Image (cartoon, rainbow, N blue to C red; front, side):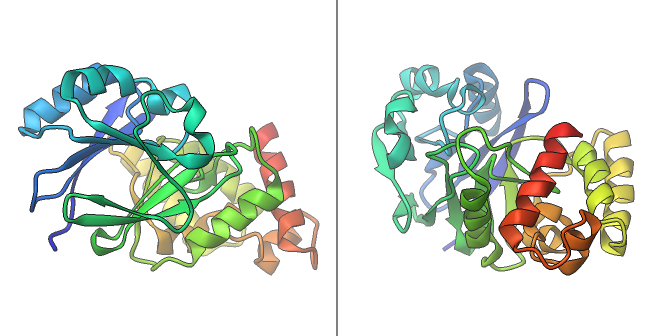
Length: 256
């Protein structure tokens, strides 16, 4: 099985949409299409035909292009079973533990609520690709609009167990701001300091910082490190349980 061909499309101010194509069959998914026009133009420029939409959650900047793309291509829209009523044009409902095939490529589905109640992620193991939406960002995590810190920490736990070589395709270019915050809650982390400096260099040249690898996130993302004693101590919660530490870090980021 060949790895997916993945093309990143920047849209709006800071969103990323992805085209993921199975080279064996030509099946091509638009992942979280915020905008139809930009996505259809990008697919046409690549000579790819969109056959699927993979939605992670219902927010407009992830589903705004659904119906127009479906009208233009007749594609199949896949989305979270637990949030089917809020996914425009949904055809296939998936949830935790399910598998879904994009041509010859197979994704394992994870329920990862916290940012929203019905958030899912798609992990293509053979391609080492995780489409995570807004659950985990490079050096960050999604704001808790509909979930609890406990839910989000549990969701993050599912992601932390994947191979470190997994590429994390999140949906926003928030990394530079996330790095500035991360240094306030993990100030002794040399790997984080080095990564923050590299991010500044990339963004100065308008180079994307996404995707990152899960290994990078495990080493430097404070939201994935709420069980690290150094992070707990830095926020004045030495010895506290990880959910309490995570909640404090998330609250500080909300006010940052």
